[in-house]
Every structure is written in structure tokens, then in C-alpha cells.
Length: 126
Image (cartoon, rainbow, N blue to C red; front, side, top):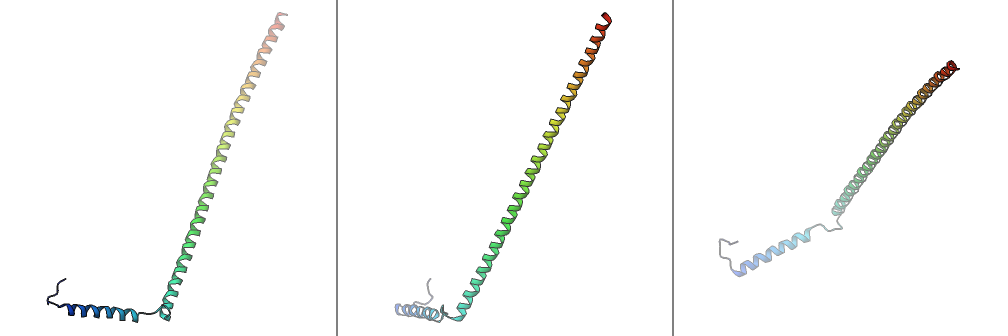
């Protein structure tokens, strides 16, 4: 950056020294780590950090509880579906057994009728 006036070397050096001195006084005037004000700010930051960590832990616990609840619901739903499927299979098996028993009973009835007719025929011939 060019200055409007033509500064000489000595003037530029003096300006740099002044700027350096101002920076040093600024840093010298800055609060030290042992100052009560700095300690107060650090304690406040620490309190905020602890509160943030507590909230994070609480959120994680809630998420974990929600996940466990969802897993339990899924397990219950799976168990209910399995029980329903098992009951349906048992009902199908019972129906099948009922049909088989009716077919066997009908077959036995037909055989008994056939045997009765055969016996009647034999009795008529004799």
C-alpha cells in the first residue's frame, strides 16, 4: 500500500517501533490467567461444558431407551406373528385331519353298506 506522502526510512522505522510498542502494551495490559475475572470466565465455561455433557448423556440414554423399546416391540410383533402363523398351521392341520377322518368314516360306511348288500345277496341265493 502506498502512502500519499513520501516517507523516509527513519519515519517508517519509527512507525513500526510505535506499532510494536503498542502491541506490547496491549498484551501487557491483558488479564493474566490468575486474575479473578479470568478464573470466573473459565469456571463459567466449565459449567457450560459439564451441562452440555449432561444433556448429551441424557439424549443418549433416551435414544438407547427408545431403541430398546423399538426392539422389544419388534420382538413382540415377531412373536405374535409366529404365534398367529403357528395357530393358522394348527387350524389347517386340524381341518385336514377332520377331512381325512370324514373320508375314512365315509369309506367305512360305504364298505359296511356294500358288505350288507353282499350279505343280503348271499342270503337270497341260499
